[in-house]
Image (cartoon, rainbow, N blue to C red):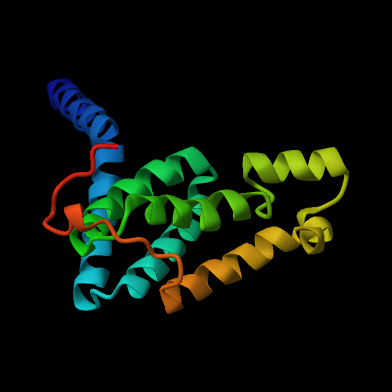
Length: 164
């Protein structure tokens, strides 16, 4: 019985170590797969941007880390933006609009904790003063729906990688 327990522990340890090493890669691949599935069906730019904005909001609220959100969502959506010939600066702006601007309204994120602590009030109490952040997310969705400020990058429309 002792040998069986030991072999299970070694195998389990190897599996856990491998899953820890590949965890972030798997999460990125899963988001890319989900983004591809949602976007393949509807390949219009505004729907891609809307999906991108929602993914940033959800990822930022669940990871509580804007840097991780930028990396994960950026990696998940960059190929689709390239395929559609949309400049990556639009992807970057979408991540900024829905991520950085909204992060301080969630009380469990580092920005939210800092804002509440520095101001001595709850996140809900200073939310009305965050007019620019709240207006910005509405404007971002409006721009996504109308196509305003969506810059094209024709060199990437053939699935090439952007060098910058």
